[in-house]
Image (cartoon, rainbow, N blue to C red; front, side):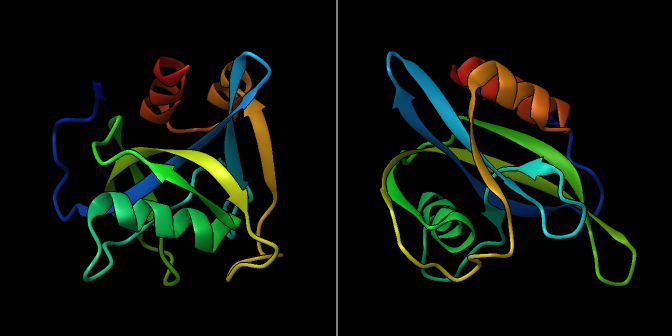
Length: 143
């Protein structure tokens, strides 16, 4: 397990994310989605959801943001930090626990359909595509 970003930033909020993956032949691919504000490549993530465990929250985010269903690991594979841009122009420091989710279903409709681009990447391509250094390392180690 890769744990990076162990130093907590002041005012930091927790989020949970899904690193969705599938096999393409003998190799793994991971799904990246575009953020709604900047269009950069990210993984589905969000705030804790009352009544759901962290891994269940990550799975819910994968459904809401990318229409994916599958088997999510109960233990995180890593953690990264980033600054979430807020509507008022501020930045909220966030610590994100990442859970692997094996993609088994692509739902025909989902809540944020049409709001983001989605693309399956090879492990090396995905690691190059994301901006957060700690997330790059989580993806590389996952491969």
